Amino acid sequence: MGSPQGSTLSTNMAAGFVDGSSTRQGVSYVDSLPVYAKELIAGGTAGAFAKTAVAPLERTKILLQTRTEGFQSLGVCQSLKRLLKQEGIRGFYKGNGASVLRIVPYAALHFMTYEQYRVWIVNNYSALGSGPVIDLLSGSLAGGTAVLCTYPLDLARTKLAYQVVDTRGSFKGGITSICTQPAYGGIKDVLTSVYKDGGIRALYRGIGPTLTGILPYAGLKFYVYEELKRHVPEEHQKSIVMRLSCGALAGLFGQTLTYPLDVVRRQMQVENLRPSIEGDAKYRNTWEGLTSIARSQGWKQLFAGLSINYIKVVPSVAIGFAAYDMMKVWLRIPPRQKPQSVTNS
Image (cartoon, rainbow, N blue to C red; front, side, top):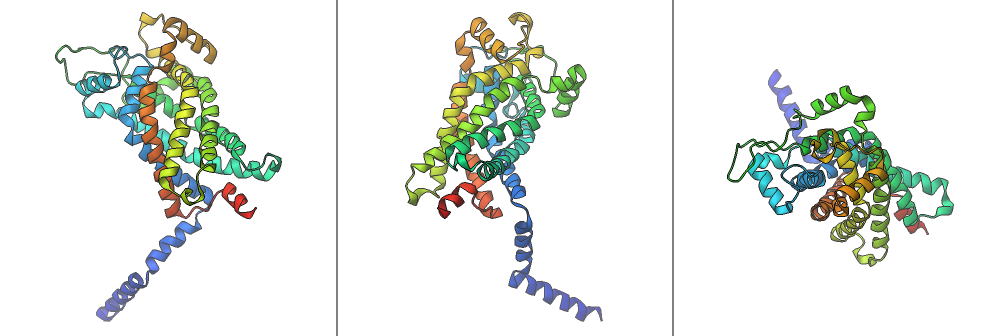
């Protein structure tokens, strides 16, 4: 009695797989998602892939920016070698958990709010048109929104990356105690410790230079990207290589102009961990940070780690755009406002 029912059930299941009904259910589920949800998923996934791929370079850049003991006078390659000797492969990814935890919501919010801000500006301020100026404004607003929502995680990432502990003991010509700053056990430990010491304000220490830097950077990135695409021949408009190239150039341009603000932000984030040899100076604001660093550490310190940032930005942007494009295709995200308005005209 159970056997005929079982065979009938098996037959129905097999028929479902053959005619693709299960696949169609998955497709219909994806199609049922609102556009903003698809943009959140696509942006978050792209950010996670890109950030993990360049984690070793990101860790080294932070060590150079914050002038960590033992790394002040080293170049990129020497810093990577020293880090490998002292902490091993895992050292390259210290703080990457916090970085990915931050970048997933950050990238998701950045892409999604950019698209939404762009549509809102085009619909409510038609006099501005739909050209690159809209990308500048919506990109800046999106960058500020994403930073405000995820900044404490960036603070935790920086504090974890700043710590260098020799987990392999002394080595030839090496250092037995690389730093004296307190060790944090992880993201939760950083956030709870910082909150206990200074409350919400401590969790947002350095937010001033961050916003000052991200607003023009995020806006310029989208502005330059869209402006470069305008000069690409029609037959190459959908090329992934073209998009990655334009995105990398836009990232490099924006980073160069706003990089000193990033250095100030990093130093403000770790100032309570810094040794007393630098006078325990605390920056009250972004401008004081810029002038103090230039005066006491030299103007070149405002661009410390910029070379590695160039090396990091290109693959990061490339991977980010490629992953975002793949996710947009899989999630079937419709074209944003700009392509639609161009087509209609």
